Length: 332
Length: 268
Image 1 (tube, one colour):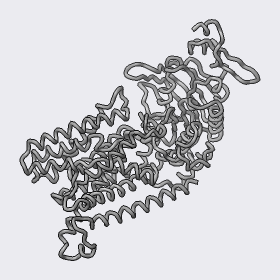
Image 2 (image 1 turned 135 degrees about the vertical axis):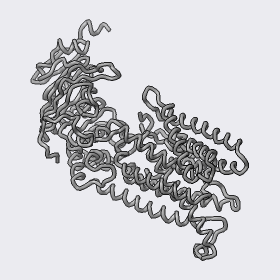
Image 3 (image 1 turned 180 degrees about the horizontal axis):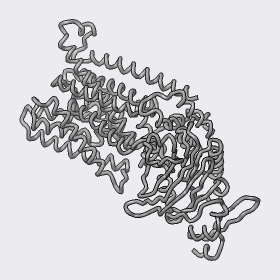
Image 4 (image 1 turned 90 degrees about the vertical axis):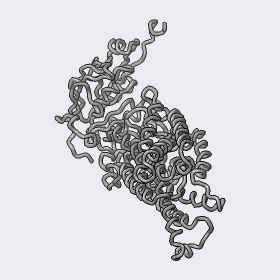
C-alpha cells in the first residue's frame, strides 16, 4: 500500500539524477564561442577543457552545497524561506573570508578562506537566530527580517573593505558581491570540494532525523533524538556548506531557496529523497546558469550570482505571498 | 512486534517545575498494562508536565519513574523511544508528507538516520495504519485529510514505535464529538489488545468517565484524587478543584459531568 507512491517518487528521483548529470556534461561545452564537443576534446584545446572542467566542478559543488544547506535550514528552522543568503549567513561568510584575505593574503588563502568563511557564517547564523528570538520563540518572518538586516550589515562591511583596499585587492573582494565561478586557485576548489563532500554525506546520514525535526522538537525528542544537540550539529553543517561555497565562489543568492522547493515538488518532502534530488538539481542548476552567463552576452561574461538573483527574487516573493494552508505560516 | 513483556509504569514521589517555580509536588502513580488512565484537572494543574516526565524526555527535580523495575533514566533516548511513545498536542506538520511518511517516522528509533525500512519496519507501519483505519489513505498528503484523521495518523506514528507505554496529551482537544469518542474508543481497544499502558490527559470529563478505566485528578500540582469514577468524579471535589460549580449525573450506567445551573454560576 505504500509501494505505489514510493515507486513514483523513486522514478522521479532516478530521472532527476540522470537529467542533472546530462546537464552538467552539457555545461562543460557552454562557453565563449561554441565549439563542437569533439573539437574541445582534441589536444589543442586541452587547456580550455581543463579550465571548463574546473569551473563546472566548482559550480556543481557550490550548487549542491547551497541547495543542501537550504534543505537543512528549512527543515530545522521550519521556515520555507530559510536559505543561506536570506539568513545573512552568506554575507557573514563573505566578511569572514575577506578578513582572512586582509590578514593572510591570497598566499595562505586556499586554506584560510574556507576557515574565515565558516567563522563568519557561524557567527552570523547565531546572531540572526538570537536577534529573531523573542520570548524563547522564533517567528518565521522575524527570522527572515533579522537575516536580511544582518546580510545588509555584512554587505556594507564588505563594501568598506572594497573601498579601503588597493586596486588588485579590490577585484578579489568585489566579486563576492556578484558571485562568480571563475577559478582563481584550483587548490581552493579541491579543498572546498573535499569539505563539502564530507558535509553533504554527514547531512544525508541524518535524513530521517531531519524528517522528525520537521515535525518539531517535541516529536523528535519522543522518537529518541537529542533534539537540541542534533539541531546544533545540523545547523553547523549547513553553515559549513554555505560558507565553504562562499569562500570559493562568492555570494550566490537563492540557490538554497529555489532548488529545495522544486526538488520537493518532484520527489516529495522525505529527506532520503529530497537531499539527493536537491544536490543533483543544485549542481546542474548552478553549472548551467553559469554556462548561460558565459554565452548570453558574449564577449561579456555575466557573473552567475546575477542570474540566480534574477530568477530567485520573484520566486522568493511568490513564496512569501503564498497563503496555502498553515504551510509554514505559523511554525513555531 | 515488541516482544518485551507488558510492564506497569510507576512514578515515585515526582517533584518538578520550571525556572525554580514548582509545578508538581510529590506525585506517585502506577498505571497497569491494559488500562487507560485519564489525567484530569484544570489548565495549569500540571497534566502536560506530568506526561512529559512519564515519557522520560524530561528529568524531574526529584523522584523516579520505573518501567517495570527499570528506572527510565537508565535507558538511552533511543532505547526509551522503543518502549514509550508520546502523542503531543497541537502538532503542526509544515510540509505535505504523506500519511505513510508520517507513520514511518515512528520507526526512527529502529532505523537510525539513513537506513532503508526493513520488512519488519514496513510491517509495523502497515499494522499501525490498519489499527487506526488509515490504510486506504496511506498515500494521501497529511494536509488533505481531516483533523480527526490527522490525530489518528499521529497515533499511528506512536504505534509504529511498537511501544509498551502510550502517552497522549489532550488527544481529543481539537476534535468534534464524533471523532473524539471514536478516538477514545480506539485507544481503549488498543490498550486491551496490545496490553499497553495508556495515560492521557483530557478536559472532557464525561468522555473520560465513559472511556478511561481509571482516573487521576490533579489540582495545582498535587494529586487530589485517584481511582475509579466513584472515587474521583465527586461533585464537591470537582467543584472545588475546577473552581466552578459542577454536577455529576449518573443514569443507566452513564456518567455526565456538567456545569451546575445555579445562581452562583449564572451571576458572573
